[in-house]
Image 1 (cartoon, rainbow, N blue to C red):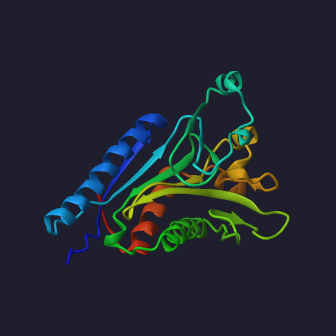
Image 2: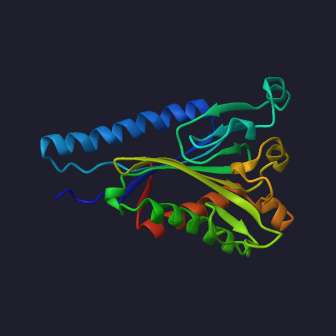
Length: 236
């Protein structure tokens, strides 16, 4: 029996180009899958490493495997005018925006170390954001039929504050969540966010009426992720 490894290496990548972050993720994801494959092939029980990365990206739009290109409302010149880039990527979900003031979390976890249930995995990530918002007096929750974290769900004022999109292979995860803290929300007007054209997008800054300290928000989010997954998080 392979021993479960609850240790998670954490690193904040700061402001990093999306392609560079994606390349880093891909390599670590591949290494993690390879470690699991070697254990299986060699009948060994070496612990498989887990990682949690936080990052902010320069302005970028990303389209998931199930997304529609027409949900990007800008052409190449429009992207250039907005100083933004665009990528078709290998996560689930439709189109979304990443930019400064938004916490993007990339957990690269071997879920065999925690629980092998992708639905529970998504709901646990959402719960970490819900608890973080509650620390600031913001009441949030889930919207039936949709992923992510919402305010005033199921009524005409519903607005999304956190999007999720993940990839999972052999119970190893990559990609993750995008949490609007001090995000420039005008960039969302250039897409149909997550393919939803009749709901608003919001941020902590908009809801609170001031800019919260994003480094403080990161620490609270990291703590809630660690507690919910029963991780032992340490800085890499």
